[in-house]
Image 1 (cartoon, one colour):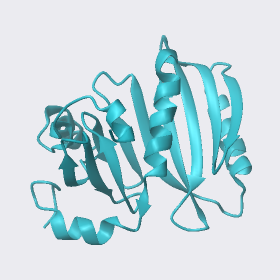
Image 2 (image 1 turned 180 degrees about the horizontal axis):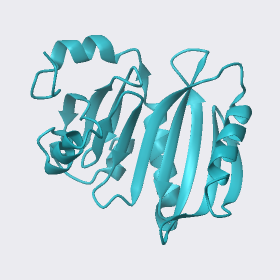
Image 3 (image 1 turned 180 degrees about the vertical axis):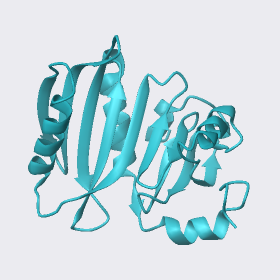
Image 4 (image 1 turned 120 degrees about the horizontal axis):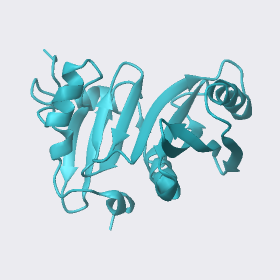
Length: 202
């Protein structure tokens, strides 16, 4: 079984259709649109999308929503207990640790006393903010950095999950980041996208 199949929430790619009610509502609210769906493999329970803001192709488990804007790809499951946002960050001469320093300063300035942890394993660096609050709901927030499409860029995944789902959510984010294929989306998306799969495409 494919590693991503463990996170599948459905047996079809319906959540990646622009006509799904959730996706249509987000598009009407100018929150973003569904990325180009390249293919779905129902047997492996994964779908492959071309993501313009990441300049990459990646596989997703079925049953997850994917919405992209000019800068980010947002992924969430029905119920939204786990949400993952992936984007690119310019290094500007900074190390991964320095980028995390900036994120920590920004986040801790507007979060109620989170418990902060730093993690480093293999090619990724992470910042964990525990006991964050979203209104009255306790959440855990993780920021993962991995190499980007070039030496001047990092890939940044922001993971938001309930405490019970934190470890699972980070595991999925790691799998997604590991599967990114950079600079592979431009030709593939252009060859397969239609007005139906990519609203606004002409």
